[in-house]
Amino acid sequence: MNRTQITLLLAIGALALWFAHRWWRSLTSKGSGGAMRPSAEQLLIGFVTNFFDTLGISSFATTTALYRLRAVVMDEQIPGTLNVGHGLPTMAQALIFIAAVAVEPVLLASMITSAVLGAWLGAGIVVRLQRRAIQLGMGVALLIAASLFALVNLGLLSKGGDALALSGWTFALAVTANFVYGALMPLGIGLFGPCMITLALLGMNPLVAFPIMMGSCAFLMPLASVRFVDSGRYDARAALGLTLAGLPAVLLAAYIVKSLPLTAMRWLVVGVVTYVAISVLRAALASPVRVSTEARL
Image (tube, rainbow, N blue to C red; front, side, top):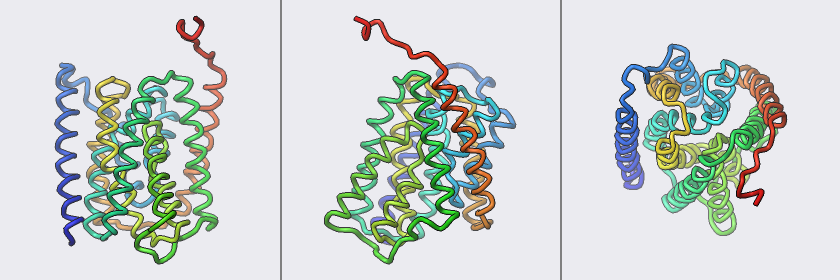
């Protein structure tokens, strides 16, 4: 393990402790006690989505679909719940994969930094969005996720090359793209798929993409999530369910199961996510557009 890997692991560990403390302090300050205890269904969703996330099926898309199908979380609270609840399990994934794969330090640091800046900007916008805008964003995000799953199954996406680093315009494009993906994360659009595809199209080894995308999420999710925690725009019980069941699910998937034939599972996800995306968009288009007093003036 090189110095960059050790530094990143220590930084992610420290960030995880900071975020856990910040979130716990926010929860306990509400004095709600047992009311914050997740239900069995919320824990099951947390376990299943994080288990398959570790194996390569995005947790954001699957969690959003399950929340809407089961009416577990209100639409306007789903983006915040995803970012807050999946934060610590994603950081656990990052610790596991960064320890196993060495990445060119400048590229890794630049892409993580750009994703964090994008997420901080994006979270500040999302916490102020109205329900209709969030529904439209989630609907589009789910359609994008379903399309990516389908393209992967059909073998229509580049599987990457042998490059272990980028330079020149490819470096600049990758860093810029990660800023955009980071900005979209608070809206519920997962970074894993778009980031991996971008790096593959630029000729990078797909193995190297794992620590980049997981490291990006490990740093950006807790920093963006504090905006949702401070604003209260998330479901605390559901988020706790994602975290408490998600952490053991990550360890089980990474160290015991390690891999599964996921093609059939992806097709199932494509069908469910597409159905939910259409229902979200229909609900958004059917709801009236709110115009603030300031806008009318």
